[in-house]
Image (cartoon, rainbow, N blue to C red):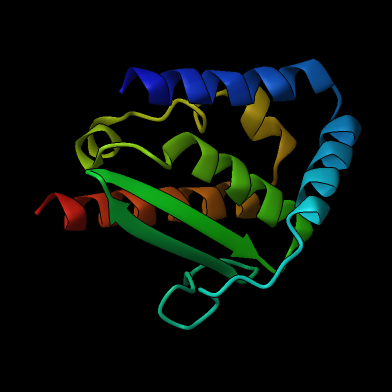
Length: 137
């Protein structure tokens, strides 16, 4: 669980060094464009519902850890989901379930993104936790 905390803290540090909303968007566009591929998991089973853009999330279990891959048709959302997968991927299911994300409570982080983007990130986190429960059983 400690590694999740440190990973979140590292992501927040990246965003805090960018300081302005304009710089954050430029950075997210840069990251999102770097992740421009057609992954094998783009199918209806991995498509998240309730999001404004299309977001696919694929989880698999290997060596007692959950690994997470994500993709979105929106460049900004693609980058944001990338950061979420960096935080939660390669962790034990119990650590994911027990983690209490402070990312969404962070005012600096929340203020940079619209409610729709924050809601999409919450939907992704809920799916990740749901998958963790599935692999825990």
